[in-house]
Image 1 (tube, rainbow, N blue to C red):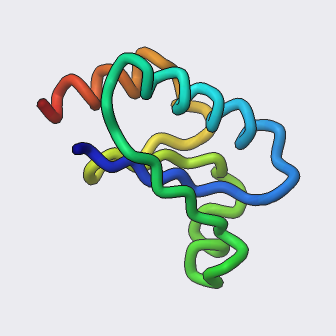
Image 2 (cartoon, rainbow, N blue to C red; image 1 turned 90 degrees about the horizontal axis):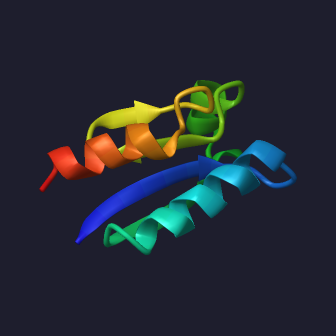
Length: 80
């Protein structure tokens, strides 16, 4: 099963919307979600603090401005 990493933080409206999108996509494309709170790792906080939510599928990262159903679908289909 494919694994999607979801970099997020508490009290983040964009993160909540991205999580809802990921959960909706799971109904169509089987994958697991690894939810990662960036505040639990200083390196992740430094890397992602102004870009969250970030979704990483394989080696491809999508930040908050790139997170769309179409973008994630294209990557998931490419990984088949």
